[in-house]
Length: 125
Ligand SMILES: [Zn+2]
Ligand SMILES: [Zn+2]
Image (cartoon, rainbow, N blue to C red; front, side, top):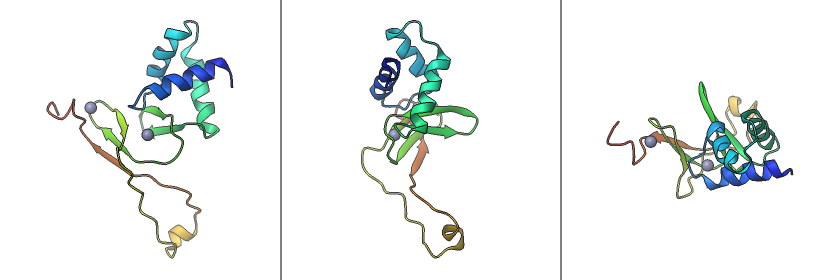
């Protein structure tokens, strides 16, 4: 684990709203002024490929990163895009093994995502 990667991971762990790469970059830059966005992005991709963190993809909008690689449930704000962990555990419902669609796949895990407006956005939305 390089020093760069350690710092990127620390800055990701400091944010509770699952930041996108450019926000992580701005935080890391405070500590490593010469680092580039491409380097931060490459390290985030690598850590996600190795299962150290998870990458949350939302179609056309920027991916966000989660320091917790284990499946867990989220709330996503549709106005500001922040993603937070639910403060309690909600298991994704199990899929019945008898369904042909389920049988033809090997399903490892699942997670629940709620969407709406966060406290800062709810009155403006
Ligand atoms: Zn919001
Ligand atoms: Zn999370």
